[in-house]
Each structure stands twice: as structure tokens, then as C-alpha cells.
Length: 492
Ligand SMILES: Cc1cc2nc3c(=O)[nH]c(=O)nc-3n(C[C@H](O)[C@H](O)[C@H](O)COP(=O)(O)OP(=O)(O)OC[C@H]3O[C@@H](n4cnc5c(N)ncnc54)[C@H](O)[C@@H]3O)c2cc1C
Image (cartoon, rainbow, N blue to C red; front, side, top):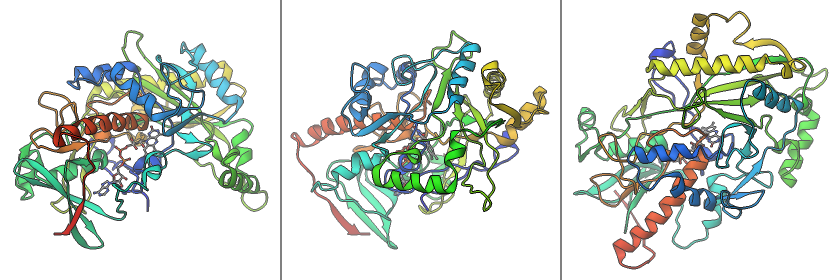
């Protein structure tokens, strides 16, 4: 109901599996359904964007916008923001297992940091979450809700954007479907698309902006030939699990009566066990010390995949477990988003092309080996039972590769399909304006020229903050002065 229900076409390197590509279909988009991990990425990620032609997006340039967007619970300083719209809290969940993982990381040569959003976000660190006062700080809660009373904001829910109206080379409005009718909104100044990595390229292509040959296949007249939908990237992760010798704190919390009380406390007071996630530890590591940015992330889980509510005599308790998810941070493989038809309600075709570049498998294997090595290190001896996934019998390289192909999945961080920059792969200029079309901008995860060493939400909010400044200064350019525009909906 809150998910677009997208999945990829069969992935050739993953035994032709269709990979689920969850996206939030709700106000706040995926920020309203995500795991709330708040990670900005490594300074080197943004400096790399500049090398991709995204001038003005170096870490020095984006840092003020990260600060502006967040309210970090420990307060603001040169690096962190203290009074922005998005609440950021450190993980509250406590489990001795987490300390053991940090030790296991140290034994394996990985450092520990006190702030994974500091200037050197490397090694193990406690996860920070986009949570304020025990409640999700989504884009809708942080930005939209407080702005709803503004007279120049009109929110339509249940509408489906169908096409950008373009006259000549200028965007003049947007057509959307609402309750079965097609409606056009006329833009006084500019049109801004924020439909995400899969649906923003769809909207552009339906509007004649995209690869000319592909548009012609569907009878769409190409207005501007651009590599819209290309350059698709996503983080791939493995799920490795072990049984836990004795049930841990999360397992105890999952007893039905305890969790019911916790849910009530969370609802009424925004506090207590139900406001804490059973993880709280991430690591961003370099498998080679010479790398500029980390190439592997480890996500620690203090619950097994089958964790659920239980109650004595009525529903048996599940066997407790714990896990580690190694993720490939900078895949070389590139996929694409294509139209399925010229109809706006048809989902796009997604080809991730995961593992099509052999180097990606090599890095994932490295992540797998290091994760298993850490999990088998002495500090975890008191916790570790039998290996559940992939299982002790998966030992040889070919067995591991086979298991990877059978089980690897995305952690839902698609990006890059409307990349900003310069050169042949750019769709947008560094001011996020669609090349070759006036008054049309994109502001969402699709604009990233390449993936960052982080979960994407904090970076998307930073992009939106920076875009707001660009839009304000663009408004001055268009009108000569700051004025509020009107809005005219007309049936098409
Ligand atoms: C399950 C899950 C877990 C995640 N966990 C984390 C995490 O812990 N930390 C983190 O940092 N990131 C996480 N992410 C990723 C992060 O949430 C996204 O990268 C980010 O929210 C993307 O923002 P966006 O604005 O690009 O797109 P979206 O958030 O997807 O927003 C797009 C919006 O446009 C709307 N839309 C799309 N098409 C149309 C149309 N045709 N008409 C009208 N509206 C349309 C959608 O309904 C949606 O509201 C997760 C994502 C998922 C799905």
C-alpha cells in the first residue's frame, strides 16, 4: 500500500532473479518507510562528484547544507548542525553483542569512531538515526508538515504525475492524473521533479526528454536526446547470520505482552523499547588502506531474519540470532531504467545489471571473507552459535560465489539515473537543471553522479537544501525580484 511494488527484470548474473526495488508511495517518499539510518558519507565521495563534473558539490560546498538540515542531539559545531528540521539521534539500543562486534572489528584491524558523521567516517561506529523524540523524522515530518499552512503551498494527494508540459524548449507545467482525470498545472517559474531514481527518469522520458531511439520505440517524439535512465547504481548487500547461544535483549523485548506495553509507550510518549532499532552499529571500511573512500560497509544486526512476536504456550519463541551484512559501496556495474510503455501508470523496466563488472564480485567476496573472519573472532565466542547463513558447509570460493548470486539483494539505495555533471553521461548541469530544457529541474537521489559511501537519505536532504538556495537565486533571475507565484489547474 505504501510501496510502488517495483522489481527489476531478471538479473543475468543473479540466476535471473527479479530484485525487489522498494520505494515509498506516501508523503515523504522512501524517507517515510526507510530504516532511518542517518549517514552523510565520506568527504571523498563529494570531492569525487566534482571530478565527475558536478562543480560546486565538493565536501566543503555541501557541508553547510548537511548542517542546515539536521538537529544533531549532541548539538551543533563546525561539522554538525544543531537546529535543522531533521532530528538526528544516536542509537539507544544496548546489547553486549555490539561491544563484542567493535572488539572483533579492532582485532581484525578496523578502527572505531565516536561520530560516523564526523570528518572521518571510517571504521565501526554507533548508528545515528533520523529520529526526533522517539518519532521518525521523515522528509514529510521535518519539512512538509511545518510548511502546510503556507498560502503558496497546495498539496494534492493521490495524484499521479504523468508528463512535463514543454513548449519549444521550455517547461511550462506538469500534467497529472487525479481521480481518473488528467489535470495540468501551469508553472509561473519552473517545474521541479522529485519522483526518485526510477520515476523521475520515467516522467522525463514520457515528456520527450531521454534517449531518442528508445523514446521513438514507444512513439514518443524526442525533444532532447539525453542519457536519462542510464548510469543506474545501487548498493548490494549479503546477509550472514549465526544462532545466538543465549537470547539477547531484543529477543526478550519481543514477548507479546512486553512489546504491546512498549508500543503503547512509544505511541503516547515517544520513548521506550519500541522506539529503538535492534542494530545500532555500522562500519565503513577500506579493504585497501590506499583507497580514498571506504569500499565496504558492514551492518550489524542483533536479531535474526525470522524475529517475530512470541508468547509462552501460545506462540513459541523464535531461535535468537545475530548477523552482519557486508555491502558493496562503489559498484562499477551500471544499469538502466527504461520505459515499459508510453503509459504513465505502467511501471518502468529496471535493469540493475548487478555484478556485470567482475570487480564487483571480487570486492563482495572480500567483504564476505572479512565479515566471516570477524564473526569468528574471539570477542564473539560467548555469543556465537552455529552459522545459519550461508552455513558452515559453504566454504569453497565457488560455493560462496554461488550463494552470493542466489541471495544478494539491494539495500534500496538506487541513484544516478539523472546524473548532474558534464560530459556525455550528464542529464543535469550542476545547478540540477535539465540540459537543453529551460525551467526544469530535478531534486532527488537520481541526480547523484555516483553512489556515496553511505545510506542515501541524509545526502538527498542535503541536495534538497542546496537546491532550495539555487531555486531561490533562480527565482531572482526569472522575476528580477523575489515574488510568490500563482497556480492554475486546468483539465487537459
Ligand atoms: C526499505 C528502505 C530502507 C531504506 N533505509 C534507509 C536508511 O536506513 N537510511 C537512509 O539514509 N536511506 C535509506 N533508504 C534510502 C532512502 O530512503 C532513499 O534513498 C531516499 O528516501 C530517496 O529519496 P528520493 O527523494 O530520491 O525518492 P523517494 O523518497 O522515493 O521519493 C519519491 C516520491 O515521489 C513520489 N512519486 C514517484 N512517482 C510519482 C508520480 N508519477 N506521481 C506522483 N508522485 C510520484 C513517490 O510516491 C515518493 O513520495 C531506504 C530505502 C528503502 C526503500
